[in-house]
Every structure is written in C-alpha cells, then in structure tokens.
Length: 224
Image (tube, rainbow, N blue to C red):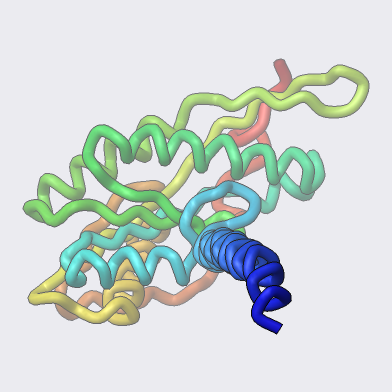
C-alpha cells in the first residue's frame, strides 16, 4: 500500500499542477472576454467612439465635471438618400476621426450617441473658452471629404454641423447635462450651424423642420 501511494504521488502532483495551469488559463480567457464585452457595451461599433453608456461612464468617472457638447451634422439624410448608406457610414467614420483628432490636443473625448449625433466631453474650463474650442472643432469638420461610389465616380461631401454646449454647475447629473446640451443644440440649429452655450432659462425651440433638410443638396454635395 505504501509503495503504491508513493508511486501515485507524482501523478497527483502533476494533476494538481495541470489543474492550476488550466484554472489560470480559464481566468485569463474570462478576463479577456469580460474586457471585450465591456468595450463592446461602451463603444459604437461603426466609429469606435464611446457610445451613450460609455460617455456616461466617462462623465461620471470625472466627478461630473466635464463639459458636455452635442454635435449634430446638417443635411446628413441627404447623403444617405443620394449616395446610399455605405457612403453615409463612410462619412460618419471620417467625421469620427476628425473629432478624435480635434479632441486630442485639448484632452477631450469624442463619442457617438446615434445616427448623425456626436458628443464631446471637454475638460472643465471657462464657458467662453469652451465655446471657442467647439467653434474651432466645427471649423475643422468643414473640409470636404471624398468618397468613391459606383463606376469609379468620386463625390466630395462638405460636412456642416451645429453644437450645443452645457457647462456643469456644481457637478450636475448626466441626464441634466444632456438635456441642457440638447436645448442649446436646437438653439444652434435655429440660428444655423453655430456653437451655442446653454444658459439658465433657455427653452427648447419648436421643431419646425427636420435637422436633415436644413441645407439644399447643392450646398452639400458636389462631384470631384
């Protein structure tokens, strides 16, 4: 019996080591899967930017001190209707990259909420400085973007956007900041493609025209 037990000991030790190795391997795979799942849950699959949930998580991680900016593209429905969703998606990806590049020097973060509506989270600063930063970002978006369409045809699409800016007042909740930025955005749409700061008492204007019909096709699209 004693001899048998001793001869079995290496097998038991080997099995224990293998079990620990497999356990560590499973843990690594689990951590990787959880990291991937969280990334997918907090990022837009088309552009790779933060989605609504990811933006909220970032905002709250900054002690609700970030300036919230909603950026809405003008005339985007015309792009989809004229050139199809493939070109429309390519336009959104290009806009996302421009926003990312513009955010980097000022330590801001870009996100996409839905459709043609993007979001910026800026470090806390003076309202006038934030408005100037956003105006500069909108200007950077306005360079034409070239896309290839059927039969080697190329089309130049000139982006245009408006923005609503909500500066936090004593750590406002995420939902409140989004609502304020949305009100300011509609004010910006009403005056035509500007960066507007939310002010106390500002009201949501009547939505008479859809966002997408503000520009004529000839103002938005031209052939290369």
